[in-house]
Amino acid sequence: MLSRPYRLLAIVGVIVLCAVAIGACGGGGSSSSSSGSTEEASSGGSSEAGGSEETGGAEEGGESADVAAAEKAVAEFTGKPSPFPVDEPLKEKMPSDTKILYMQCGSPICQLQWSMVEAAGKAMGVETKQIKAGSQASEVANAFDTAVAEEPDAVLVPAIEPSLFRTQLEELQANGVAVVTSGVVDPQEYGIETADFFRPSVEMTGKLLAAKAVAQKGDEANIAYYAVPELAFIGVQQEAFEAEMENLCPECSVRVVDIPLSTVGNTAPNRMISDLQQNPDTNMAIFSTNEMAEGLPAAMKTAGIEGVETWGFGSTPANLQDIKEGGLTGALEIDLPVDVWTYVDEAARAILGQELSPAEKTGEPPVPDFQFLEGKDITFNPEHGWTGYPEYEEKFTELWEGK
Image 1 (cartoon, one colour):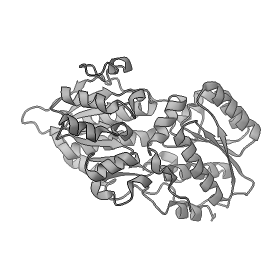
Image 2: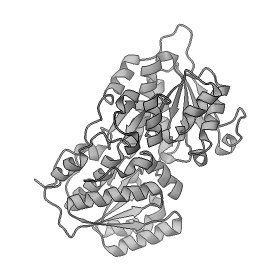
Image 3: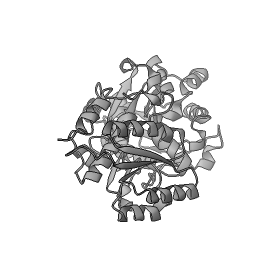
């Protein structure tokens, strides 16, 4: 049985930290309504501290919010995880001489994922091997040169921008090697047919965060959406969030505030406090990645800021502890362990020439599983992180026994 080694790291860090090490997580672009640059955001407590823009604004006496639709959307991800992403067994047991390579992107979260890939490979009965891709373009290219020379059956790529290894990718594809990505928004642009956590799942996070905002606040919602503009997947999430807000509550107030990636984990809370102080009517803060909210509850208390609900995507153990204690309202969680075992499963199906399970193929329902958590839902030890399916190892192992 695999222990929970993800206890010290952010679940959403699979995207964030890989992007720090390598660059963007894939195609996608950001919404045009996002305003303010990284340079402006670094100015601290000025009125441009993060770059913001208001869209909409509730009219007096107007009932604009479709709360019923918002509540219905949120209900599917409340009190239980979304469906397990794999429901069809392999058509046969994997050959023991199968070789699957894992390209470690150079961040701590990638090292963490390797331990999960290794455990999944052991459960599947195949050989797995780690190749360190490093954090520079030349290191990535060299690592993929090694991957080509290894003559593997499959290569797992966690959120490394494919443009950095385009030549080697073409070689791998020409050699019939299955290339599986996770966290690349538009893998099909590179001829990659097997992926998880790509555009449909990323867009789903934005839609669900918007639905949660409307379900909680109706047309009274006055929202600050805190985005990390350097991350390509955030741009896609932001576009989906704003579009769903326009759909569910066209008169709600939405302010997009850019938080530079370099400040996440250090000064991001100060920037958000400055923004909230300048915009005292804000009653909900949405974090594109909940990791940026580490330290925010204490900062809000010190600043005397009250009455602001907080919801984000993906939580660190520290975030989960804050949610449990009431410092943060809640979060839409992503299941990292199931995600990792899913793309090992996808690699096996590609090797066997077997179609993916429906959810794997479309990314809908979300792959991996999602769930909204509030304090009452955190009955587990926050240090262990969250998985919607504690029995995931047994579920995958059974599926991998073959028909």
